Image (cartoon, rainbow over all chains, first blue to last red):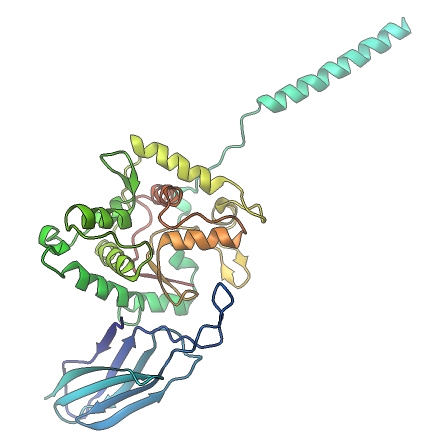
Length: 106
Length: 263
């Protein structure tokens, strides 16, 4: 179900600060709401986002129930060498979504 | 003589009263005036700057999650939509809702399902399902920036009248018609929100309240629930007629914004 959108510049100059944008489709059900029949809607959230750059963690975020559906996470990093960026989201039950992008540093 | 004069006066007064009553009965029924084109503005104008920014950014706009999925569905399978519709249906959504050859009124969702049943030999998608929303959003997105061009003459005229009647009829415990807010009081505040003119150009739209994409019919359903009226079914003929009225009301004036972001 999950759609994922990632924006990484294709190329960057060495030492350049680049912006990374990510968006993942997820309902982020807080666990505090009730359905139309009064039943408790069970908590269902992504609780961890990690981005690695050639294996090193460059950005990591813990997510909590108050975060809106379809979490949009954007951050800046310094481009040092060509390589791969690995994006990973994992939910409370251990389900994991991953994506990779390549970055060419000139 | 005095007595005759008194009776005459009584009679004249009675006649005048009857005449007044008759005049009131014969007065033209209260006419409803459509929102003038020159005053029409997209719902975008009534959003906060933050919500406008979210819609303007084609990456951050969460509606694009559905547009992306719609693109995948449009190109998927042996009998993919794209094999016939090589132009990706640019501009197609601006002509919906429209009257079919059989005389029924269908909106874009209905046309997608007709194609699925008749051409792709697949089961129709349930209204408001993620797949139908995605396909609708993708196809409508191809017409972004284009004004609505629905047919308003011939058999469509009857449907427009039906939709118009619904729009101007007071209903529910609150005794409100759509027009009470969206024609007479747009631009004013309703709690923290600015009342829009009720245009359909952003739909399917990502509503922050829903935290997901939703159809125009879901929006109408919510409005009816909001005035404590009995809502119609999603995909019902009534809502499709209202959809046509809204499109005709804004034709050549308001441009498509799918996927819009609304509060």
